[in-house]
Image (cartoon, rainbow, N blue to C red; front, side):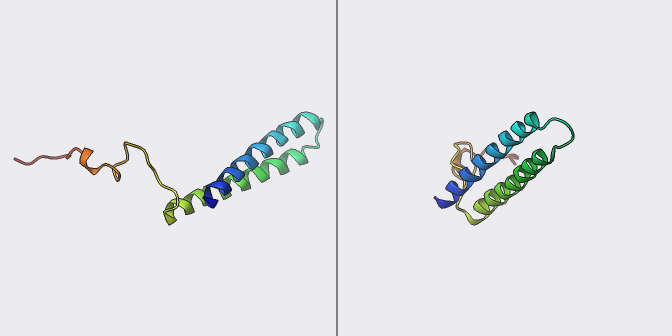
Length: 85
């Protein structure tokens, strides 16, 4: 459960960083775009952390798929690819 909370917090941080970069882009007129670049750099860093967190969650087994089309959950629905007579 804690892993899911961390993922949601990272995602919200990405959205906040992206929106602040847009505000800085609109406010800073001229060549001073340093704040915009910093905000976008933070967004990229948070996105990398989010991908690493999701990868770790899938690898450790804390995150998984419960989709009905998942082959692991419903092996009886698999259609054999080759049939030999």
